[in-house]
Amino acid sequence: MEILKTVLAEINALGLKGDAYCEENLKNETMVNDGEIDQIRQSDSFGCAVRVFKNGKMGFSYFTAKDNIEAKNAVKKAADTALIEGYEKYVLPSFCKCTPPDTVDPDYNNITSKIRQDKALETEAAVKKYGKKVMFVRDTNLTDVKSTSHYMNTQGAASSADKTYFYCFTSAISSDGAAQEASEVMTGSCIFNDINAEALGREAAQKADMLLGGGALKTGRYDLILPPQAAVDFLQILAPLFYASNIRKGKSLFGSNKEGDTVASSILNINDDALLAFRAGSFGTDGEGTAGKNKMLIKHGRLMEFLYDIASADYFKKAPGGNGVRGSFKTLPECGVSNFYIVPGDSRKDIIMKGSGLIINSLMGLHTADPVSGNFSLGLNGWLLEKGVIKQAVKEMLVTGNIKDVLMNVKDVCEDTVFYFNYGSPTIVIGDMTAAGR
Image 1 (cartoon, rainbow, N blue to C red):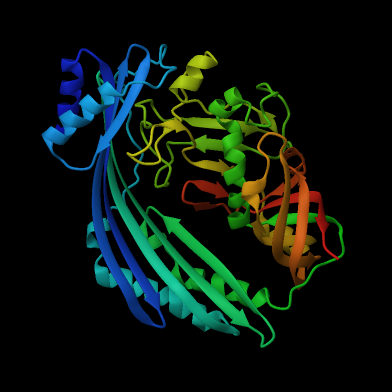
Image 2 (cartoon, rainbow, N blue to C red; image 1 turned 120 degrees about the vertical axis):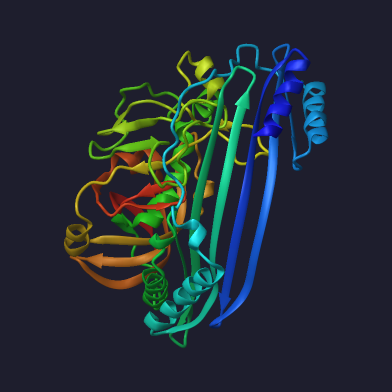
């Protein structure tokens, strides 16, 4: 991209090193309420980030117009504010030949506004169709983003990538006359035709209906059955424990562990894979220009490695792992995940048909889990399952424990993997957890 060449020329003219990252996004949103199109929005955006390295320090700036003067001013600002310490040994990567995985819907240009509207309307209609006690369907939303990103640095690294991502959200509110219960569900994919409106609407309706009449069970020990969406919620608090930057800062309960230590059940395998086709977190190179990789973090319960960006890799004397990710052009690259997921295992059908325990619909308060000690106390709702039969809805209960115990107590891993953005999981069963009720 020409604007990046302008940035690099300006950095070189100052006799410094640095890089530039830009992204362009085209976003479409369709909102439906009460069988009518409520809102249609389309927006596009551009942004470019500049990093300059000067005397072992780093300066950062960004601009939002494809304008050479703006680009030059951003470089000057970054150079003038190069005050962030700790970059004495930071080495920008040189050029690597990295083929990005396919992440663009080949039919994207044929998806019209009418097709988008029909999909959103179909989703809401499915909620009403399957919800016997559904009173309201709120804010059914179909959104898609087509993004293009470019990276270049003064050492010769250069890469570009395109991606599409579609996600659909809906919420259902059911009532039995005495109480109301709500369910919120979403689905997403890089491919538009993967959005199954009928299945999404049915899931929202059935969950809302099935949550009615719930109450607390007796305090005791229960197996917890986490369907993909609940398991992914758990993965989002688990992932940062693998960041080498958090290990370095003493902010991870894995801080005392070494590679090869047993940290989980032998049936648990967790990957972080930037090279998967048609996944939200896929890329050829990360936000620092390092090649993306497929990494097995937990293999048969053993800790295999952590996630490294350039700075943390240098600190631990490791090779950069391709995990220097950017939340947007407005933020610096930092340790993060690509596609973080639990590797699928056995059949979900057998577990649900024969199992007993608490099927978790949602866990409340996950953000309060302590990343250092691993302790948590979470509210839950869901359903009581006895020998494959759902007996009643469950709510107003607390599950307490420790993240390490959760990992060690994984007793079943199913095959029904679902990805929500860049996190994925099948249904998993965690044995013998304390749930407090009445």
